[in-house]
Length: 615
Image 1 (cartoon, one colour):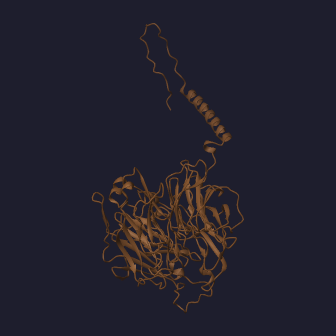
Image 2 (tube, rainbow, N blue to C red; image 1 turned 90 degrees about the horizontal axis):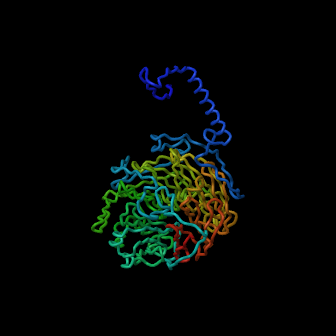
Image 3 (cartoon, rainbow, N blue to C red; image 1 turned 180 degrees about the vertical axis):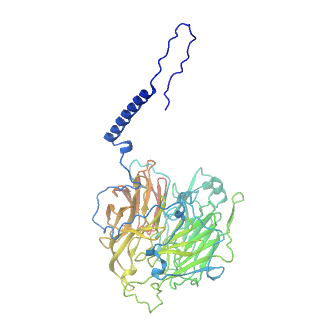
């Protein structure tokens, strides 16, 4: 390495100041610099070692194990925790069934219906590929159950928490239709902030059209109406739509910002437990008119299930493929290319599915059977229903859904082929949540105590499971079990969808579990996503079917909103589960809240809809 010398300019001979320069010994100077450098490096390394910094800084896991006092309920993981190798970029979009998740293990038989008939094979012309959850919609708000295609949300915006307090701001009356009152399970409201030009084309009241900012609550309920409310004060923004049928599940707003509302019928027109005349609907949010409906007077002939058809699932729309994806409680997965058109300048919207729509998928196994199948032996509790009440999760071209029979299925939406299946042990109505962790993809899901007791059981006890599933292979990564009660044909176990933590709750997955410890009690538990180990657990006096919702401050501190069957809404510290504030609502709150900034909206079975502020 050359020495850094100053440039020397020799004066002319005989001029004043001329001196002869001595040549430097470059070899010795090089040795000197090496010694100095070695000393500097040695001192630096010594300082790093003593301070624990730089090269000696401890390695931090990407998902550190959170610490908290464990609680006594629930059994720890019963299967060996597996850590799959990191998936490469090429592998990330490819789901391949592990040996334990091969559909043939369970005797699955599947069919695809396209262009009015069962087909041997199918390839979608306009390929489906769902975006990442953060890109599912550009609308401001909560537009589907749990907010996006990963089902990982339920709240929009951040909340400034100073007092750690809940306050009821407004409430309105809802009603009942036959035996179905107020808002049921899952019954989450939708909340959206409309742009000014969108408001002008809608049938809103004049004062709501001219408001500087309008955040609208859109809430189909079990009394057969869709309510439209101002988030600020609970005032009506437009006339309710009188449906004439019960909605138990959660509707969806088109994620593209099209003024389209997708609403599923939860009970047949005859009321009570009727399944006749059940349909899925698309409504115009411009004038409230029905643009499309699909269903049957009695049953879809393609369905195996004879005894029920309903559409409690909250549907998804793949924007690029203009395709609606909607699982049915009759055991049929429906996909409908909408041929939708929205002229924003003219204020018009339409849908016109082609005659060959929908494209449908069905499945059966040797364990599936219907009420009418008298030869089916239910004495061992192995009865498996067809039908999906949970809302599906979409990742790229794959759809993941659980069902009444306790099956988890992964279907390639572009071929309608079953890729993998997994046995979840019992009826699984709670919607899973999907996690993308680097190149790996996971699902978190929980089951109930229902079918395992047999068809004739009125009351009993059984085991519910919380599981982490590798969404690329179908393998079970870990599971946690709970002993739960089954009372008068109302199941215990997991009905609420989990919270997958962010911010200071990263590494947490949080579930409510019903009928644990007592017939009406329950727990809420936070588990470590890596290991399934318990972080904290809270005993609840009244069980919860409602899904908890996480809200975060701008700094990333996480809180939980939780509603229960005893009519309470609770604000909890997400790190510890501690109850910070409680407000009493009217009646059992089965429905799941939605949150927009600091406002929480939820309906109760007590025929009320509430707006509650977090402060």
